[in-house]
Amino acid sequence: MEKETKTSNGLSERFETAFNRIHNHLKAITAQKDGDAFMELLHTSARNHASVRAHLDELKQYAKLRNAIVHQKTEANYYIAEPHQEIVERIEQIDKMLSEPAEAMSIASSPVYIVEADTPLIQVLEMVRDFKINEYPVYEKGDCQGLLTGRDILKWMANTQLDGQITIDSVKVKDILPEKNEYLISFAKRDANIFDIEYTFEEYQSQNKKLEAILITPEGRSDELPVGIITSWDLTKNNDVILSP
Image 1 (cartoon, rainbow, N blue to C red):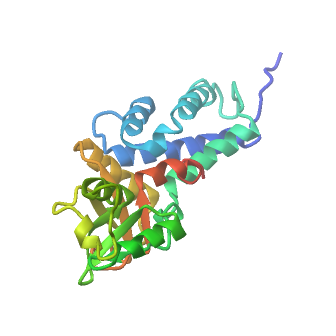
Image 2 (cartoon, rainbow, N blue to C red):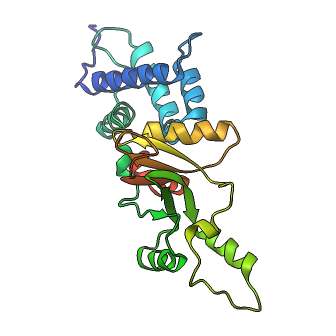
C-alpha cells in the first residue's frame, strides 16, 4: 500500500523562515560565540532585552513546534505537524518587531517643555498645571544642565517651609536645583530605535544606576534642543508599541 503523504500548504515554510530569522537575530544581539542553540540564545537574550523577554513563553512554544515540523520531518514534503494560520502570522509579527524595531520617537513624549536656570518657579508651576508634565530639562547657554522634576519642587517646598507659608515670587529654577543634580540623563539621536533606548536603560541598570530620562535630540548631543523625552515610565506604559509589532 502506497504511503500517503501530507504536502505543505506553505504555512510550515513561512513558520520556519520566520523562526530562522528570529534565531539569527538572537545570535546577533547576544554576540555569543560558544554555541548557537536556540533555547540558550533565547534565555540569554531575554535576560538583557525586555523586548525578547516579553515574548519568551511564546518563543519557547514555537521552538517546540519548530522541532516537530522540521526535525521530525521524514520526507521533503511530509510534515508531522502543520502550524495554524494564526500561529504563522503571530511568529511573523514577532520576527518583524525584532528585525524592524519601532523608532524611539514612537514612545517619546513630545513636544518637550524646557526651562532655563533663570525661569521663575511660578512659571514652572503654571507649566505643570497646564501640561501635566513633571520632568523639565534645564538649559543654560544652550546646553542641557540637568532635569527639574516635580519631586525637586516638592522637596524644596518641604525644606523651605516657614510657619506654614512659602513665598515663591522671586524663586527661580536655579534656586531649586541641588548643587549636584541627582538625576541621570542620557541623549539619543532622533533616528534611534526602541532597542537603542532599551539598551541604554538596561546598561545603566547593570551598573546599579537609575537613568531618569533619555532626551531625543537631532544628533544626540546635550547642546541641542530636545524633540522628545523618554522616561523609564514610558517604557512601561507603551508596552503596546514596544512589545507588539
